[in-house]
Amino acid sequence: MERIKITDVKSSVFNGIYHLISSENKWIAILEYIYEGKVELNEELAVDLLGISDQYLLKNLRKTCESYLVNCLKNETLAKRIEQAEHFGAEILKEGVLRFLMENLEEVSKYSGRDEIPKEVLLEVILGLQQKVKRK
Image (cartoon, rainbow, N blue to C red; front, side, top):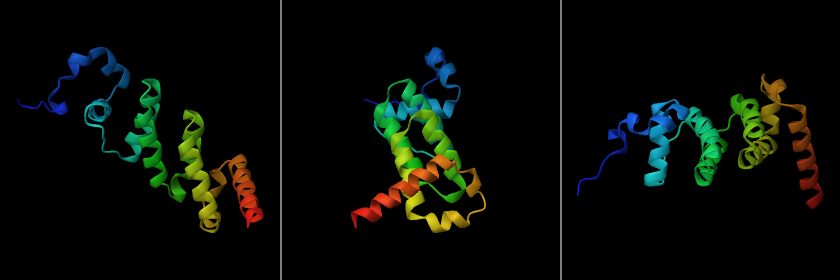
């Protein structure tokens, strides 16, 4: 029996849901994840799928997207990822951002865009570092 590729499926078959997702790439990625258990991500797609996965109760896809975004963290994306973690209630992403900040505090403090990082998040980092020091 010949296997049908997800990319061969016409979007018109899934018209109602397709319009909700509004991008063929997102739709294909979701179908690949549902039927194949994996998805090729980039940062933009991971953010888009984070919101969609929550809406359609795809918990493992959500975790995959959050973990991907944590692994892609860099100084330039910190403020954006903090905002997204808060917006989507993404605990894995938020914890990853906090861990990144704690591990790279000196480098982040020299970054010109550090002022975009919310003060509340910096306070959490400081409190986390204090607890870490107390444990030693």
